[in-house]
Structure formats: structure tokens, C-alpha cells
Image 1 (cartoon, protein in one colour):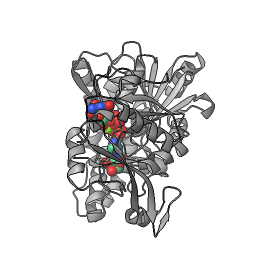
Image 2 (cartoon, helix red, strand yellow):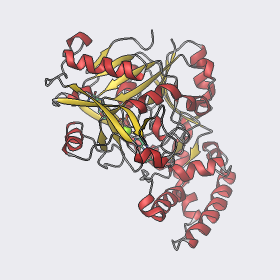
Image 3 (cartoon, helix red, strand yellow):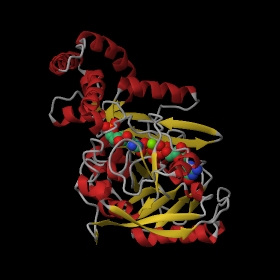
Length: 427
Ligand code: GDP
Ligand code: IMO
Ligand code: MG
């Protein structure tokens, strides 16, 4: 096996960063294909915590090429800050490459994101405020500014002037101050100089690596239920974080992908607004949030918490074509006497067969729970599957049975070492 796609199966923050970092020990390239700095991927190693937003989570390894591919949306200011942080932490960014086809998030995108959220009032999406949606809007309406425009300064200047003028009409209509295109151009001069050495046609680089038999990891961002098509629309992000998004997002064909691993938290969390059938509003929810330190990596917002939701992960198995599931944060359930699993949804007296598309049904359905006994002991020192307490293994195997895909890795802590392998993803 040479290529493994890693995706989130729920609403993001499943532990993709930790698993990509863990698998990077075996890989020679990690590719980010979609999203931008709305993502917050945490890697813990050697007693230090690293928070990555756009830079692939393989950056802590010498010899791993890290690619920010064409499907991403890039805030240059945020990316350069991230590069500075990584460098100051003693890591090299010499192996980092940025696609010439990636879209640039411009200051007016961030302002539009916040303006749109405010205008929606109680119906806001709860975005990360990073300008993601407005940038993808410009991409699709074919007026976006791409990384290669930085290499042709007159065309970059022209585009910034045109786009700023267009956005200023919207700001004026909403009673907001206009933006100064010349100030943006001036600011970007410095960014352009610094980012130039990283720019490449990354689809060529990735395909060459795959053809040479090098092991490549595709690092998903966000999660399946935040997908623009398959998520809880409109409470979603503006890209395709599912496995299929890797092909347009990195410029590789589906025949080049060998395996798709879906990361699933042993319970469920969501940050931002929108339906969440197994959400807990009682002290159990608070207990999960505290035990799991469930506060957003990017925005610091408290994450909404609930029990493991089988219909969600089963849907992820389906739309991603998952070959494997990686179950994370099992240790967070160590102190629960009883653990519930949402095994289905009931709506108007019937059990639903699949994830409903209609937001009203999603908000009104009743989750059906199954209860399992907890194990009430510390699992964080376990290193082999057999070392897990019997009830923990029963929980893992029940989830596996209900979701219909093998659980190949179980994580029982944020550290690299706290990872139990049942099946090698590169085998
Ligand atoms: P990502 O966006 O999918 O990369 O996930 P985040 O980094 O936003 O959130 C996952 C959080 O859980 C991070 O703080 C990780 O360090 C932590 N984490 C990941 N796996 C485990 C695990 O198995 N146990 C515990 N206790 N923490 C974990
Ligand atoms: P990682 O990669 C969790 C959510 C936001 C909001 C919705 C739209 O760390 O798992 P956006 O700013 O993308 O327009 O916001 O999507 N969201 C995430 N939630 N983890 C993420 O990334 C997210 N990226 C976006 O909270 O509900
Ligand atoms: Mg995250």
C-alpha cells in the first residue's frame, strides 16, 4: 500500500492530527487537500503540544515532504505566522510546498465571513471566521485569486483592485466601511516575497511520489458531516472533506488511492451550530467536555458533546468508502460507569434507514440508545489491544459491528505512544 487517505467521520476534531503524526513515521509525504486555517490539528510529542492549521501534521518528521495542495484556501498572513511558529519550535520547513493553484483568502473574505454570520443572527452557521466560505464562493464564481498570481504582480494588483471594488459595494450596502485595495497590495508585497520559495505545481510532485512507490498520506480536514454535499447542510463548511475531495483537491486520480481511514472519536463532538442528534445537554455532556478537554483548537469555543452516533459514522463509512476506522479518545470514557451508543434515529414512529437530508427531520428525530457497561479503569498505559479491559474491547467491537468497518487503530491518549495498532494501514 502506498497511499492512505485520512478523513474525519464526524463533525471534525476527531484526532486527525494525532493520527497523521503517528502514521508519518512510516510515510514520506503528507498532503493537505481541502479547507484552510479553519482546521486545528493537534500533535503531542515529547511533552510538547503543537497546533497546526494549514501546515500538514507530518512537519515534525525529518524527511517527510509536506504539501499544501490546490484544493486548499490559504490566508498567507496566517500561513507565514504558522511557518514562523514551527521554525521557532526548532523544525524545518524546507520540505514544505504550496500549490500554485491554491486559492488565496484575502482580507475582504474574512470581513465578509463575519458580516454574513452577523446578518444571519440566530441562524448563523458558527463559522470559524477565517474567511473560508467567501473564498470558496470566489473560487466557484471564477474571480478568485490564486497563488500563481503572486508570481505575476501586475495581474495580482489588477485582481485585488477589481475584487476589492466589488466587495466594497457589498460592504457599503451593509453600512460597513470600505477596504483599501492599495493597502492590501502593499501588505501582500512582503507576503509574496516570503512565500515564493514554497510555490510548486504540487499535483506533479504528489503524482511523482506515488508513481515512485513512496508512501503518501492525504490529511483530511474538518469532517464528513461538515461536507458541503453530505453534511448537515447548511451547517457545514464550504469544501469536500470526504475522501472523494482528495482527487480534485490534490490533483490525483482515484486509481492512486489504496486505503481510506476514517477517524472517529469514541463519543461525538461538534463546534458551531447545526443539528447534533446524540448531543447531551446534561451533566454527562459537561463531564465529556471536561474529561476530553473539548475546546476548539482554532477558536477556543467549547465543543458540544454527545454519545457515539452510529448512523453518523455508518454514513461516513458509506460516502468515504472507508477501509478502516481509527477510534480515538477511548480513554476519555475511562470514568463512565455506563456508556450509551446512539444506534438509530426514530422519526414519526419509524426507524430511519439513513442520514436524513432535511434539517427539520434531523432536528426533530429521536436518537435510539443502547447502553453498555463502562470499564472504570485507566486505559492510557495500554499498548496492546489485549491489554484493554474486557468492557473496553466489547465497546470497540460493538462499534465496529454496528458501523460495518474494521477498527484498525485505537488511541488512548494524545501522545504518539498512546496508540494501539490492530492492523497496519500501510500493509
Ligand atoms: P483534529 O482536528 O481532528 O486533528 O483534532 P483536534 O486536534 O482539533 O482535537 C483532538 C484533541 O484530542 C487534541 O487535543 C488531541 O491532542 C486529543 N487527542 C487525540 N487523540 C486522543 C486520544 O486518544 N486520547 C486523548 N485523551 N486525547 C486525544
Ligand atoms: P478540523 O480539521 C471542527 C466548522 C465550524 C462551523 C462550520 C463552518 O480541526 O477538524 P467554516 O469556518 O469552515 O466556514 O465553518 O464548520 N468547522 C470545524 N469544526 N473542526 C474543524 O476542523 C472545523 N472546520 C470548520 O465550526 O460549524
Ligand atoms: Mg481540530
